[in-house]
Amino acid sequence: MATQTAEPTRRDMLYIATGAAAAVATGAAVWPFIAQMNPDASTLALSSTELDIGAIPEGQIVTVKWRGKPVFVRHRTKKEIDEAEQVPLAQLPDPATDQSRVKKPEWLVVIGVCTHLGCIPLGHQGPYDGWFCPCHGSVYDTSGRIRQGPAPRNLDVPDYAFLTDTKIKIG
Amino acid sequence: MSGPSTYVPKSAIGRWFESRLPVMGLVHSSFVAYPTPKNLNYWWTFGAILSFMLGAQIVTGVVLAMHYTPNTGLAFDSVEQIMRDVNWGWLLRYLHSNGASMFFLAVYVHIARGMYYGSYKAPREVLWLLGVVIFLLMMATAFMGYVLPWGQMSFWGATVITNLFSAIPLVGDTITTWLWGGYSVDNPTLNRFFSLHYLLPFMIAGVVVLHVWALHVVGQNNPAGVEIKDVEKDSVPFTPYATLKDSVGISAFLILYCWFVFFVPNYLGDPDNYINANPLQTPAHIVPEWYFLPFYAILRAIPSKLGGVIFMFGAIVMLVLLPWLDTSRVRSAVYRPVYKVLFWCFIACVIGLGYLGSQPPEGGAVLAARILTAFYFIYFLVLLPLLGLFETPRPVPASIADSVLEGGAAEPGRA
Ligand code: HEM
Ligand code: FES
Figure (cartoon, rainbow over the protein chains, first blue to last red):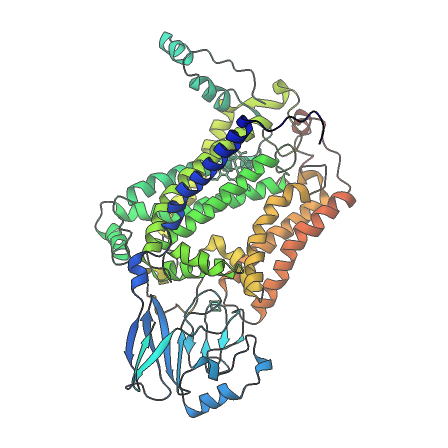
């Protein structure tokens, strides 16, 4: 310590404390203006949808709206299930087993939003007969896993539960 | 750079006011006595054209807002009501939608003018950067405006563009949810976009004031790329010379604008936007408005989500860095034989990217877009820095007066 250096004074201390208090107060005042843009209580409340799946024939995909987004409920055929289960994980850009993505093999439930930039993929299309996204060409398989194209992730699986054998609750 | 202000109020009231708020003197020194290089060509009228277009968008926008409803259930119908029921509504809407295209046409010409004549070089870097800020604000404004009619392209364009932010590692999804105010583009999104679409043009107007202020500090560049040395010999006063030349430019531009508005008002738009937004069905082929196509082509050329987003924003970062990437001491392309050729290659590259951005991303189109994307970045990051070191420029005239007296012979390619 140089001998010239004066001890910090009361004034220095008050100066720093005032500055710090002003910074905190500014942050606290700005926060509501930022946070108001987050989803409001009514949006958060719209959280679950029930669906009767008894009427969906094998091979068909039904789209339901949940939290403003489409959810695909696909009644898979034997062939589709086999294809999904037999792919070696090493061939997948976002490796995940088919078992980890379904609760019952016949029923695949995924959020129908392309993980690239959010378009809705078209069912029963593309080389893997899963989904094809028309926007920038992402290809998904019969487990909703990304196989080709710019999308980084598999189609997301929402929270859902089988209420009975023919009824599911999403969310 | 301001010339000697000769402003003396003529009336007693004028003198009384001027000694209290010298605003007339400011206007006089900026837009009357201000010395403009005497060799400016018509490419220099685009600044005035842009100012005019900003005014046109604000005036038509404010009256449209008197009839528009920013609610997902009502927005589409309120726009149809403007088209069919509101007095002169069709005209106001067509002026505003085509006006955005005209605004971008003008800004692209204005930027290309700056690139050709080296207007971004010292001492005009801050002027140039303020221009880039204006350009970014214009893009944000136009994007949000296009969402308002709530047609299919509005909705899906908004979905794709807001999802760009989800590419950001870790916080991406939090940011997109915050932007949307929900879990997808929906009513809260439409509401905030309307609020911001109203706000941003006034912010642009503020930055334009800074832009023109910076211009008046460093002075205008000109086709010869040499500074004004002798105000008497090299320049003419802004009024009447620049005022009238700008008026001719604006009038010619208005003819084009009116041709679009009255003869082909939907030519630049997408027919899918006359279909009400449907969150459960994506149109077969999503394309943005023409003025975003080159950037969209770059986004799709990169086979990775984050990579595409980085390159797309990188394309604009190149404009930010341009003043420091171009190492040549000569400003104007008129005296840079190699740069001149490269410049036109660059323009062709951007137009090519624009075309590819409008095509479905399949086969040859993808490869071509990758090649042009590579050229775009090589142009800025490799060719421009090296060119300044290796190119031998032609002799630059000693002054603006000299270049004018050479009878324009010094400028064979008067671009
Ligand atoms: C709303 C948009 C804009 C408006 C209203 C505007 C307005 C103007 C005006 C009135 C001038 C003076 C007249 C002229 O030299 O043309 C000017 C000059 C200039 N602008 Fe802009 N501008 C806009 C956007 C831009 C953008 C996006 C850039 C570049 C990225 C830019 C770069 C420049 C430069 C470098 C000059 C000086 C030109 C020179 O003297 O050579 N401007 N602007
Ligand atoms: S949004 Fe699906 S591929 Fe881009």
